[in-house]
Length: 208
Image 1 (cartoon, rainbow, N blue to C red):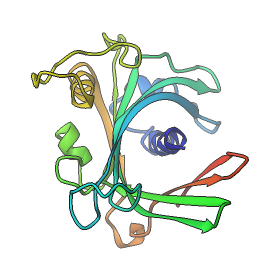
Image 2 (cartoon, rainbow, N blue to C red):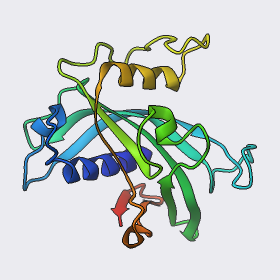
Image 3 (cartoon, rainbow, N blue to C red):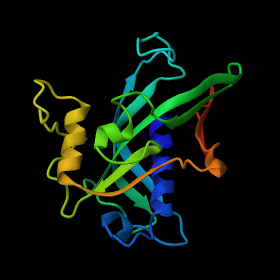
Image 4 (tube, rainbow, N blue to C red):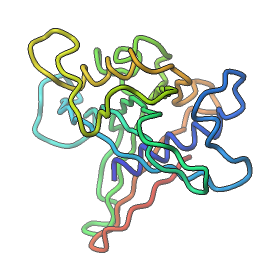
């Protein structure tokens, strides 16, 4: 569910920003007027946060945060994306969570992260509070395949974690765009909704 959601978010943002004056690798693989379905591989972490504070409450629910990165591997139709040219760092927070039809449909709504130290701007050093995705590309390819290979301890904290992956992406890529939800009154109800239907396991994602 998460990967589909993140891809939907990133795909929509790529298309919205495809006309930017600053061309990058990602603009070269978008085809105007046709289906630009993007496929990725991703790595993410779940941070358990109590909505009334930062202490974990043991529940996957409102206030919890998902952070990570995706690598764009393929695109349909051709020309396809080549692995290790594009990565995106993301951070998003659960704003509502519940069973709308008990035992049948579960719905999770996401918004930009507000937790200190976990916002997209905190992870990337740039971007507005409304940001959820930061896209970086590189030509030639990034020097490390971050899906298959650890970047090592780049932050000097004695271990390797997602922050080292984020640093590798930022150090070796070119920031092409930061996208998220707008702050205008007309955009106040923008959100991503992931719906999982059980038991078939089909996933639908709606962008409002």
